[in-house]
Image 1 (cartoon, helix red, strand yellow):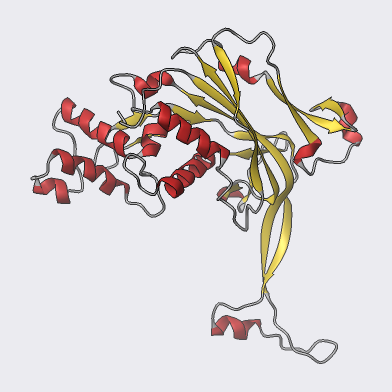
Image 2 (cartoon, rainbow, N blue to C red; image 1 turned 90 degrees about the horizontal axis):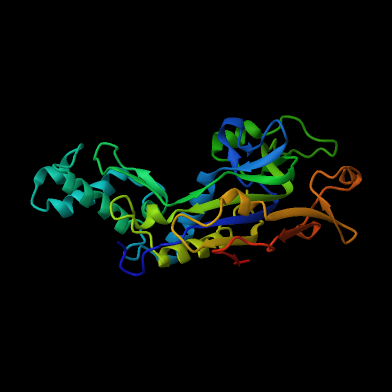
Length: 327
């Protein structure tokens, strides 16, 4: 178990609302990097893998490889070499452990220690789990934290924007781009390289997350995910877009973050029933309109967060459940 916090013994769920303005929240490589879409409804999608990447990036940025907070899935990493670290601790004098392309535990006890090494040292393994049996076998870990796909509250309409590049990559490209004919004023110019950029003018997305206390603190199956780790996770969700700006995602922000905390490890109410207590609606002239209300058909599309209102039903809350509004 990670030594900097107490065992997590209470179940949690959370709802996240985040928005994007003139950006691509999650490109689909199978569709020319267009924003992910549900083709039947027109709603935008953001994958769970994308959201986990933001968490990893924030922890890596803020913890700077502190003990217990290294990140397993990093850009350019050779994952088997990270598995090898666990074997080198178990077999410090074994030459095979230093060079072999394949390694497997010699006993169930060693397999448990190798798995625990990965959980203790890598925050994302302790949090999300992972399949660590690629050549150098460190087992499989089922993480206590999972995200669902995010979906836009209303349909979104991606735009394809043409862009140009003024500079050439090399001399051959520059010569190829030179126009042979002068323009109307007798001036020569460049046939600039053309490109495409896909953006969503505005979209408000909703995602759900789950934290399993048994998978965190079970004496055999648990990863050692602690209360301290949970706070790191919640801080990461709050700030997952704060340091993630890019040309494709210049303006994204977490707008609402609601956590349901249970008094028990197995929970005091079904997650879907708690999620139903959080709803988003459109504001029209100061009045609430349910999403899907036909009166919205004649209204202009939402272009900012203030066009929406998010409500939380706190009446008759099930016993043993606490609502925490982080944002």
